Length: 189
Image (cartoon, rainbow, N blue to C red; front, side, top):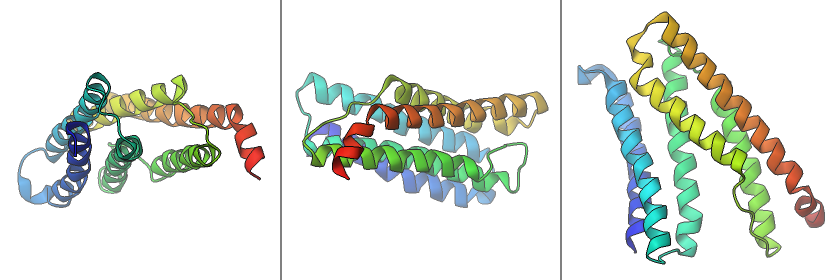
């Protein structure tokens, strides 16, 4: 296994670590969300380096093309689900259950379209709106882990605005992706 794929696998291993830290938040005695934030940032940084190293050293593999985006989606969804669960006991950290559902739905739809395209011998690159969505959602999650635990009312409102923008970018990028690739879908029916 090459270094980029090892970094991706490390990112996947950090997902259960996130979950375990969250489950033991009452025992840790420190701000668990800052620990979660550090784990999330470390995992996110591996995403940057695995792609950079793979391209620079010509280590791009079929496995890497498949597992890297999957690892990204699992990391973001784990973070969203943790925050959504936390919202039940800490309403100032606003992350209702429907936010992860919308984001997860978009990811399933886009991944399904990509699989149909691959089956037809076509590769669909990520759109700029999808990249904006990903970047903004990651920024929102970092904000939630590091700033939202301060429990200051105006910070809560900023978190709500960030979350709403993330959801709107998710919907827009999903619709854009569908419309740009509807011919691939229609050809496969």
